[in-house]
Image (tube, rainbow, N blue to C red; front, side, top):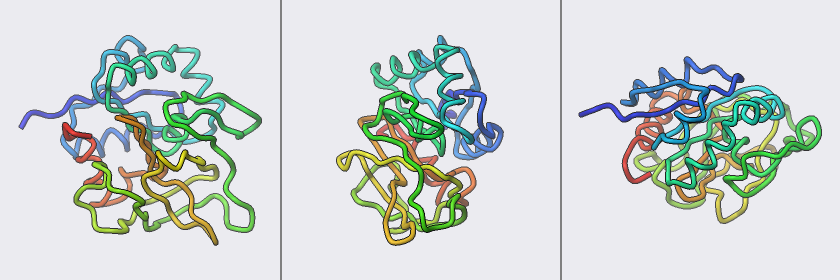
Length: 205
């Protein structure tokens, strides 16, 4: 079977080698780029990231990668945001003020609720709210690895799965069309994470 071509966006904030290794193990042929002309023509894109929303979004705008990602999404590309990359897909974030996001998913990024340990870090069971191709083949309640202090308040129609946090639940997976995001790190989540990445590489995601 031929490797599936995936473009990984270099937003300047993130541990790209881990994401690349995870995708390659899942069967991808990975191109890492910060060139908008490569992103805009890609059919399958991963946007990873760790760190602060404003810095990442600023770099995307400076390099015109924000425009490229929106154009790629409009042309039907499959896009997966991971951790901060997941948050960047939303309309805006309150981290360090107010910063507009890519607007490919509906909702806002806010700080995790007070009264619980922040950052939210470690292995947690993801609770699906509806069927989704990303979660195909996973047992109900797969364990994934999280590290984050902010979380997306997603449109209920786009929220695919949640994760418990204190006395509430927060968004773990969201999707709108072929644009999807995961708050956890599938590349650090063992076999369950590997299954999710393989699902992303399949044709019907």
